[in-house]
Length: 395
Image (cartoon, rainbow, N blue to C red; front, side):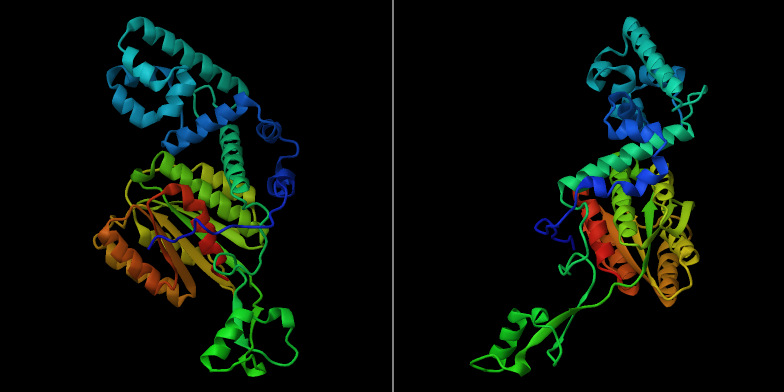
């Protein structure tokens, strides 16, 4: 079921300066934006550190507690904090730390470095006196997340891509029909017309053989990105999923559509109704932490509430690495929620990461009932492309 998108290319992209305005108006007076865009290393490093901490489910850094965990059980501490946090705060390679963590002199030196680096983050206002991540810290992490995904999109040719007639991947659907008087000649499809003539046994093209492609106008779309934040999503996995959400919000808002967000585990922990407020969506995505079980039904029920009751395209993109585990009969509850959403005119696509066979079976049922598409993903590098592919397939 994994889509073959490696050969798809996006053409006619514009310069990056023309696409960054989506945040610029909100950050004109903000030194953080200037610092990140100008590549100030210390600010970017702090932003990445905070971003990684949030991805690991952390809200604060406490030197004494961290050192106790490093000394008592380094392997568990490495799982808890992740390698980048260890490297950035201690100044040492994690493998070097592991070899020397039981040496008292090294412990004292490492603790000094951690305390020094955290004090610098306090001076910058990224953490408070209690070492808790501040709103300013979340802001700089948001900007770093945004710029990292923007750089990736630019490198892959996704910046500035406009609606055009590459319909397998990029919206504005084509309608194929018989040629009629008044149609533009440039809308004639030579390949389809020739195939029709051959099938009819004609030695040359006749007017009756001509087929045209006309582009249907893309109506307004409301998209909700539902991100599974269960415990198994922690670390790099949730970071990649967040970046895919950033790509979706960036492109959909650029296309004048509206984007909402649902973050769910065993319950909905964050919700945003569809809007064009990119800064708000970016901040909410950045501040998402992984925890607990998976309840897909509760996410679908919340989506039904958040979508407007209007004559627009309403589409839910579910992203999960596991099938529902919460509740007495999670499968039944999920299918009932899908049926309810479908009755309300909401389509549902599902992007499943490393799903097992039972998970794939349920995912197929969800997308079949939900009139959406299923993407089974094993490699995270293509996730943003897959999310964008699904977005451009609706409307």
